[in-house]
Image 1 (cartoon, rainbow, N blue to C red):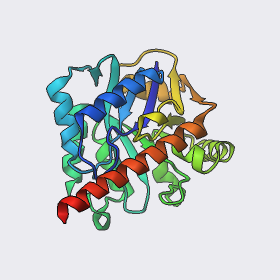
Image 2 (image 1 turned 45 degrees about the horizontal axis):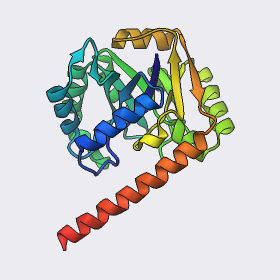
Image 3 (image 1 turned 90 degrees about the horizontal axis):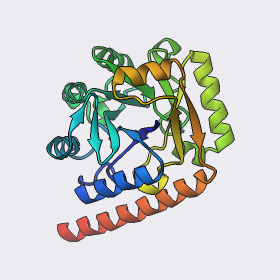
Image 4 (image 1 turned 60 degrees about the horizontal axis):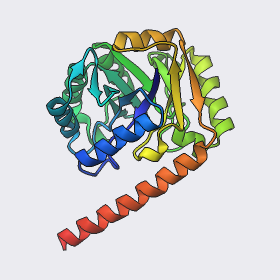
Length: 258
Protein backbone atom coordinates (compact mmCIF):
# COMPACT_ATOMS: atom_id res chain seq x y z
CA UNK A 1 0.00 0.00 0.00
CA UNK A 2 1.37 3.39 -1.01
CA UNK A 3 0.42 6.18 1.39
CA UNK A 4 1.23 9.88 1.77
CA UNK A 5 1.02 11.09 5.40
CA UNK A 6 0.96 14.86 4.76
CA UNK A 7 -1.61 16.14 2.27
CA UNK A 8 -3.98 19.06 1.79
CA UNK A 9 -7.06 19.03 -0.42
CA UNK A 10 -7.46 22.82 -0.51
CA UNK A 11 -5.22 25.04 -2.62
CA UNK A 12 -4.57 27.38 0.31
CA UNK A 13 -5.43 27.88 3.96
CA UNK A 14 -7.60 30.93 3.20
CA UNK A 15 -9.39 29.45 0.19
CA UNK A 16 -12.84 27.92 0.19
CA UNK A 17 -13.32 24.17 -0.21
CA UNK A 18 -14.11 23.41 -3.86
CA UNK A 19 -15.61 19.97 -4.64
CA UNK A 20 -14.31 20.21 -8.22
CA UNK A 21 -10.74 20.78 -7.00
CA UNK A 22 -11.15 17.93 -4.53
CA UNK A 23 -12.14 15.58 -7.36
CA UNK A 24 -9.06 16.55 -9.38
CA UNK A 25 -6.81 16.00 -6.36
CA UNK A 26 -8.24 12.52 -5.74
CA UNK A 27 -7.88 11.52 -9.38
CA UNK A 28 -4.30 12.77 -9.57
CA UNK A 29 -3.34 11.09 -6.28
CA UNK A 30 -4.26 7.75 -7.81
CA UNK A 31 -2.42 8.55 -11.03
CA UNK A 32 0.66 9.30 -8.90
CA UNK A 33 0.48 5.75 -7.55
CA UNK A 34 -1.12 6.40 -4.18
CA UNK A 35 -3.54 3.97 -2.58
CA UNK A 36 -4.15 6.10 0.50
CA UNK A 37 -3.55 9.54 1.96
CA UNK A 38 -3.77 11.09 5.39
CA UNK A 39 -5.86 14.25 5.04
CA UNK A 40 -3.96 16.71 7.23
CA UNK A 41 -5.70 20.00 6.44
CA UNK A 42 -4.64 22.93 8.64
CA UNK A 43 -6.81 23.02 11.76
CA UNK A 44 -7.26 26.77 11.31
CA UNK A 45 -8.00 26.70 7.60
CA UNK A 46 -11.05 28.61 6.41
CA UNK A 47 -14.18 26.56 7.20
CA UNK A 48 -12.31 23.45 8.33
CA UNK A 49 -15.48 21.39 8.68
CA UNK A 50 -16.67 21.94 5.10
CA UNK A 51 -14.35 19.22 3.82
CA UNK A 52 -15.54 16.64 6.33
CA UNK A 53 -19.17 17.60 5.74
CA UNK A 54 -18.62 16.96 2.03
CA UNK A 55 -16.93 13.61 2.65
CA UNK A 56 -19.71 12.50 4.99
CA UNK A 57 -22.37 13.48 2.45
CA UNK A 58 -20.82 11.81 -0.58
CA UNK A 59 -18.58 8.89 0.39
CA UNK A 60 -18.75 5.82 2.63
CA UNK A 61 -16.66 5.69 5.78
CA UNK A 62 -15.26 2.16 6.14
CA UNK A 63 -13.32 1.08 9.23
CA UNK A 64 -11.14 4.21 9.74
CA UNK A 65 -11.09 5.76 6.26
CA UNK A 66 -13.28 7.34 3.61
CA UNK A 67 -13.42 5.28 0.42
CA UNK A 68 -13.23 7.84 -2.39
CA UNK A 69 -13.21 6.29 -5.85
CA UNK A 70 -10.68 3.67 -4.81
CA UNK A 71 -8.51 6.00 -2.70
CA UNK A 72 -8.42 5.61 1.09
CA UNK A 73 -8.57 8.94 2.90
CA UNK A 74 -7.67 8.73 6.59
CA UNK A 75 -8.93 11.72 8.63
CA UNK A 76 -6.42 14.08 10.15
CA UNK A 77 -5.33 17.68 10.64
CA UNK A 78 -2.20 19.81 10.98
CA UNK A 79 -1.97 21.78 14.23
CA UNK A 80 0.25 24.74 15.15
CA UNK A 81 1.74 24.73 18.67
CA UNK A 82 2.60 27.67 20.90
CA UNK A 83 6.35 27.07 20.99
CA UNK A 84 6.40 26.99 17.14
CA UNK A 85 5.98 23.86 15.05
CA UNK A 86 3.35 21.89 13.18
CA UNK A 87 2.03 18.53 14.38
CA UNK A 88 0.14 16.14 12.12
CA UNK A 89 -2.64 14.18 13.82
CA UNK A 90 -4.23 11.19 12.07
CA UNK A 91 -7.10 9.42 13.78
CA UNK A 92 -10.70 8.22 13.59
CA UNK A 93 -13.19 10.64 12.06
CA UNK A 94 -15.00 11.18 15.37
CA UNK A 95 -11.70 11.71 17.18
CA UNK A 96 -10.47 14.33 14.70
CA UNK A 97 -13.76 16.22 14.98
CA UNK A 98 -13.66 16.01 18.78
CA UNK A 99 -10.08 17.28 18.90
CA UNK A 100 -10.96 20.08 16.48
CA UNK A 101 -13.75 21.20 18.81
CA UNK A 102 -11.32 21.19 21.74
CA UNK A 103 -8.87 23.25 19.69
CA UNK A 104 -11.33 25.99 18.69
CA UNK A 105 -10.02 28.38 21.40
CA UNK A 106 -6.51 27.90 19.94
CA UNK A 107 -7.03 28.75 16.26
CA UNK A 108 -5.25 32.13 16.39
CA UNK A 109 -1.48 32.50 16.72
CA UNK A 110 -1.65 34.31 20.07
CA UNK A 111 -3.62 31.38 21.48
CA UNK A 112 -1.89 28.35 19.94
CA UNK A 113 -1.94 25.33 22.23
CA UNK A 114 1.28 24.35 24.05
CA UNK A 115 2.97 21.24 22.66
CA UNK A 116 2.53 19.20 25.87
CA UNK A 117 -1.18 20.04 26.04
CA UNK A 118 -1.65 18.96 22.41
CA UNK A 119 0.06 15.66 23.20
CA UNK A 120 -2.26 15.19 26.19
CA UNK A 121 -5.27 15.83 23.98
CA UNK A 122 -4.10 13.53 21.17
CA UNK A 123 -3.21 10.76 23.60
CA UNK A 124 -6.75 10.77 24.95
CA UNK A 125 -7.71 9.29 21.56
CA UNK A 126 -6.10 6.66 19.34
CA UNK A 127 -3.99 9.05 17.30
CA UNK A 128 -0.89 8.94 15.12
CA UNK A 129 1.19 12.00 16.05
CA UNK A 130 3.78 13.13 13.47
CA UNK A 131 6.20 16.03 13.86
CA UNK A 132 5.76 18.04 10.67
CA UNK A 133 8.78 19.28 8.66
CA UNK A 134 11.08 19.40 11.74
CA UNK A 135 13.85 21.44 10.07
CA UNK A 136 11.76 24.02 8.21
CA UNK A 137 13.28 27.40 9.17
CA UNK A 138 9.88 28.99 9.84
CA UNK A 139 8.46 26.16 11.96
CA UNK A 140 11.27 23.99 13.37
CA UNK A 141 10.80 21.35 16.04
CA UNK A 142 14.40 21.19 17.22
CA UNK A 143 13.80 23.70 20.03
CA UNK A 144 11.34 21.43 21.85
CA UNK A 145 12.33 19.34 24.85
CA UNK A 146 13.41 15.84 23.77
CA UNK A 147 11.16 14.21 26.38
CA UNK A 148 8.17 15.91 24.78
CA UNK A 149 9.22 15.11 21.22
CA UNK A 150 9.53 11.45 22.18
CA UNK A 151 5.76 11.44 22.68
CA UNK A 152 5.41 11.67 18.90
CA UNK A 153 4.98 8.53 16.80
CA UNK A 154 7.17 9.69 13.90
CA UNK A 155 8.85 12.62 12.19
CA UNK A 156 7.86 13.93 8.76
CA UNK A 157 10.26 13.63 5.82
CA UNK A 158 8.63 16.44 3.93
CA UNK A 159 8.57 16.69 0.14
CA UNK A 160 8.53 20.48 0.16
CA UNK A 161 11.54 20.64 2.51
CA UNK A 162 13.50 18.06 0.53
CA UNK A 163 13.21 20.50 -2.34
CA UNK A 164 13.83 23.78 -0.49
CA UNK A 165 16.55 22.59 1.92
CA UNK A 166 18.10 19.95 -0.31
CA UNK A 167 17.33 16.25 -0.61
CA UNK A 168 20.55 14.91 0.91
CA UNK A 169 20.81 17.51 3.68
CA UNK A 170 17.18 17.32 4.78
CA UNK A 171 17.09 13.53 4.57
CA UNK A 172 20.18 13.18 6.76
CA UNK A 173 19.05 15.82 9.28
CA UNK A 174 15.59 14.33 9.75
CA UNK A 175 16.86 10.77 10.11
CA UNK A 176 19.65 11.77 12.49
CA UNK A 177 17.21 13.73 14.64
CA UNK A 178 14.71 10.86 14.60
CA UNK A 179 17.40 8.36 15.59
CA UNK A 180 18.39 10.52 18.57
CA UNK A 181 14.76 10.55 19.69
CA UNK A 182 14.14 6.88 18.91
CA UNK A 183 11.40 7.72 16.41
CA UNK A 184 10.55 6.38 12.96
CA UNK A 185 10.41 8.67 9.90
CA UNK A 186 7.44 8.75 7.52
CA UNK A 187 7.14 10.63 4.24
CA UNK A 188 4.64 13.34 3.40
CA UNK A 189 4.45 15.36 0.20
CA UNK A 190 2.81 18.38 1.92
CA UNK A 191 0.92 18.96 -1.30
CA UNK A 192 -1.70 21.63 -1.84
CA UNK A 193 -1.50 21.08 -5.61
CA UNK A 194 -1.66 17.72 -7.35
CA UNK A 195 1.68 17.98 -9.18
CA UNK A 196 3.39 17.41 -5.83
CA UNK A 197 1.78 14.01 -5.28
CA UNK A 198 4.34 11.24 -5.63
CA UNK A 199 7.32 13.42 -4.75
CA UNK A 200 7.63 11.18 -1.70
CA UNK A 201 5.54 8.27 -0.47
CA UNK A 202 5.57 5.34 1.93
CA UNK A 203 5.44 1.82 0.50
CA UNK A 204 3.82 -0.28 3.23
CA UNK A 205 4.48 -4.00 3.30
CA UNK A 206 0.76 -4.70 3.57
CA UNK A 207 -2.61 -3.01 3.27
CA UNK A 208 -3.93 -1.02 6.25
CA UNK A 209 -7.51 -0.02 6.93
CA UNK A 210 -7.44 1.16 10.55
CA UNK A 211 -5.52 3.65 12.64
CA UNK A 212 -4.22 0.86 14.86
CA UNK A 213 -2.87 -1.01 11.81
CA UNK A 214 -1.16 2.14 10.50
CA UNK A 215 0.29 2.92 13.91
CA UNK A 216 1.65 -0.61 14.34
CA UNK A 217 3.20 -0.58 10.86
CA UNK A 218 4.94 2.73 11.60
CA UNK A 219 6.19 1.52 14.97
CA UNK A 220 7.52 -1.71 13.42
CA UNK A 221 8.93 0.16 10.40
CA UNK A 222 7.09 -2.18 8.07
CA UNK A 223 7.48 0.15 5.11
CA UNK A 224 10.04 1.92 2.96
CA UNK A 225 10.20 5.53 1.82
CA UNK A 226 10.35 6.32 -1.87
CA UNK A 227 11.69 9.66 -3.11
CA UNK A 228 10.87 10.46 -6.71
CA UNK A 229 13.84 11.18 -8.98
CA UNK A 230 11.92 14.22 -10.26
CA UNK A 231 11.00 15.52 -6.79
CA UNK A 232 12.46 18.97 -7.44
CA UNK A 233 10.47 19.35 -10.65
CA UNK A 234 7.23 18.14 -9.02
CA UNK A 235 7.52 20.46 -6.01
CA UNK A 236 8.69 23.48 -7.99
CA UNK A 237 5.87 23.08 -10.53
CA UNK A 238 3.27 22.64 -7.79
CA UNK A 239 4.56 25.66 -5.88
CA UNK A 240 4.44 27.90 -8.93
CA UNK A 241 0.92 26.72 -9.80
CA UNK A 242 -0.26 27.26 -6.22
CA UNK A 243 1.24 30.76 -6.20
CA UNK A 244 -0.53 31.65 -9.44
CA UNK A 245 -3.90 30.35 -8.21
CA UNK A 246 -3.54 32.30 -4.94
CA UNK A 247 -2.80 35.47 -6.90
CA UNK A 248 -5.92 34.92 -9.02
CA UNK A 249 -8.01 34.37 -5.88
CA UNK A 250 -6.63 37.52 -4.28
CA UNK A 251 -7.42 39.55 -7.37
CA UNK A 252 -10.99 38.26 -7.39
CA UNK A 253 -11.41 39.09 -3.68
CA UNK A 254 -10.01 42.58 -4.19
CA UNK A 255 -12.41 43.19 -7.09
CA UNK A 256 -15.33 41.97 -5.02
CA UNK A 257 -14.42 44.22 -2.07
CA UNK A 258 -13.94 47.27 -4.27
